[in-house]
Image 1 (cartoon, rainbow, N blue to C red):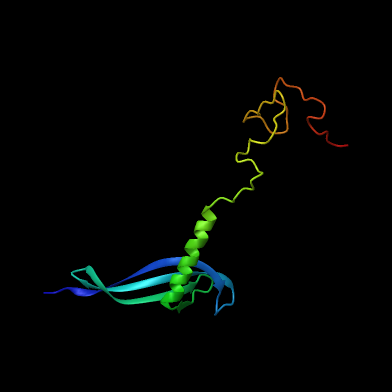
Image 2: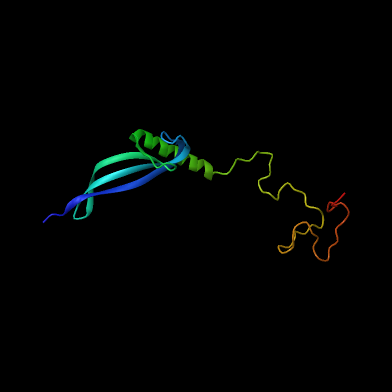
Length: 136
């Protein structure tokens, strides 16, 4: 006795934003690849059908798209993720570290974490011009 059948798996290739053809909203669309494979004894052996779709997250309509468009949208999404992961380039005249390039006043002590900012630390009196006066 042979047990055969098929199984469909859906893979989300990318999430992109473009204008929906049905609802007219600029919404995110899930670009999906669904692969139907022939199974023998519940083991998937080879694909028998592949389709690519884009589903609107606003209205839910699902449209078939060509493979070339799905691959292009996936590449654009990967490129956007790589650009978002890279830090912004710094200008050569800017210091590389936030503490570099800033002159600390003589005798400067960083505030204690439990002390609210803008208030003097206990045992230390503010000097003239150190804190702006309110209400003038």
